[in-house]
Length: 117
Image (cartoon, rainbow, N blue to C red; front, side, top):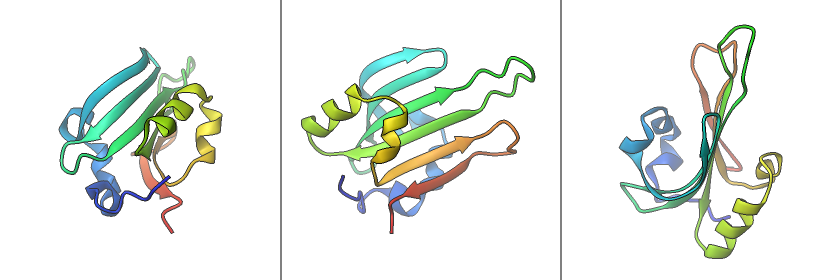
């Protein structure tokens, strides 16, 4: 995957802490239920496309559900089709990707790029 160096998220990944609607336009919805979403998003500032996945793990004991967000910059229909077909676990094979991880015991989400170097 190509590095989205023109996108504000490349230098300011913390922007993903804002509402999705503030940063992105939803181009296509692939799946959406209470605790699992997959979209194709477009950055409102630069037009960069991202394959987006949100996953929430139910914590029946404490109610503080861990949440994990993955954004993978994409450029072609082939990249998008590949990502649509693979499992959540296999998304970790792709980089660069922007992660927003909010584990149960955290006060705020950790936001970071994988494969930025």
